[in-house]
Length: 248
Image 1 (cartoon, rainbow, N blue to C red):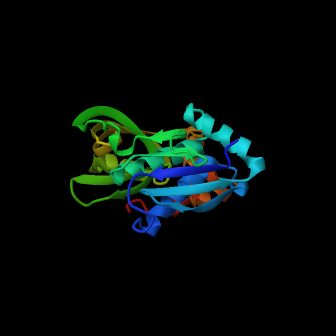
Image 2: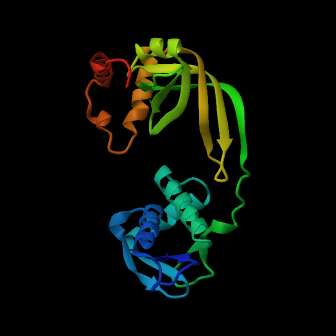
Image 3: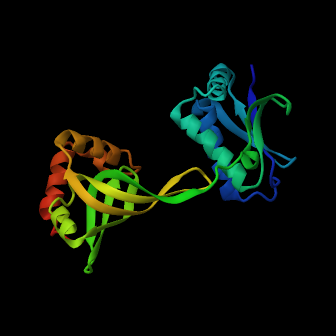
């Protein structure tokens, strides 16, 4: 059973890799290996940058099983996210990489394509009818076009426009969950991420209490969010609305 794993970063050298960058790789390698109490930093090897982790004997079978699950696409969300992040870092560093076991570079457990991974083509921008759900957090503007913002989990939708009458009616639902419908202008970037450039509101609806719970659950997922500790977040949203003065 392997008692060490090495992340082979085919870029930099131990003497030249920025400390902050090394820390990013180290953090994500630890997340991939899991079982933190039994995994220890052992050192750096030359030959580009090779980050070595030593595994306690009793933790070795668990770590090996964990990596096998990741390799087969069955890893935990945390480990899978760390795997993708290492691959992204390598792509930014114009490099590839791998994790190999013991001291055998040919014994690769996981390979990171990094910079060699084909990038999706940029697509758009194009217009498409659709809808957006979220908590209305901002209504602003003195001209004929008023700008809105919706918060949905970690995502804040901006670039939303409405005419003054629609905005006036929407402002009565500040800090409430709403669904806006209209035409959005979308772009898919080279990372495959869809970006909303602009959204023109035609109509809207106020979401029901069950929908409010779903929106609040997404708000609770935000790192460092105080929504997690609230006993009655629904009442908190209503209190925010009562304190609001309409336009922000």
